[in-house]
Figure (cartoon, rainbow, N blue to C red):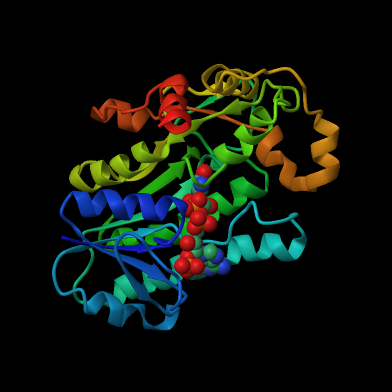
Length: 299
Ligand code: NDP
């Protein structure tokens, strides 16, 4: 079995490449760049107009995993950056879907990334897969990204991975969240009641493999651990596991001034449950935050 990962050179993509290789798959990390180094999988360079040829060359059974998109953390959300965040995802997904329609050897599965930002944000509500989308910028990006992938359903099984806050040692949000604690100045961020629906990076890779193996899974899948926590609880857990203090609050206003609209990623959240995964029998390796943090901060 072959797997092509668009955005396979990134933080999440490399972990999935590594896991799929361990499972005996032939793995291709598809990159826009011919110079990008990858540790796991074979890097292949792609151009959006020649994806049909790339898929045709797969010959055997293959699946496609699409994670590609401009980072939402890489700077203030100017109108220009917001456009790039959306368009980078739409263009890649549209090109993949078009190539799937045209190629004779169809993939067995398209897994397309999305995000729990789909649901918008709330301190009170709990979200499951069949809840409607929210109305802010990230909800709009996630909704349109998902909709772009859906025409591929005519040709193959499509899974929409609504990713939570992915926790890993060497990328994503966690190293930035831990840093103040290392310097002894960690504490509550904003009001602290905003939800953090997190998931361990290794569970993300296992879930992708699980979705591949379970034909019954299709459509949106919340990729979050079963026990989300508030931002204040998250900080306390870091302090507990790292044996540091949780004491100096970071006021909301400082983040709003420093980061502009992008501060929403930190100051707002949503409580999301992985209903589809739990109902189907998936067992999380890291169901609770303390277990995940002990693995990520100590090993
Ligand atoms: P990374 O930024 O580490 O990787 C994203 C990949 O996308 C890169 O390797 C890059 O591949 C490709 N890429 C970057 N810019 C563009 C662009 N303008 N056009 C096309 N491709 C581009 O992200 P993560 O691994 O952290 O996340 C993967 C996906 O999952 C992202 O789309 C992200 O929005 C989503 N997600 C991530 C979460 C997290 O907690 N990390 C949470 C929710 C969603 P190359 O340069 O080799 O082509």
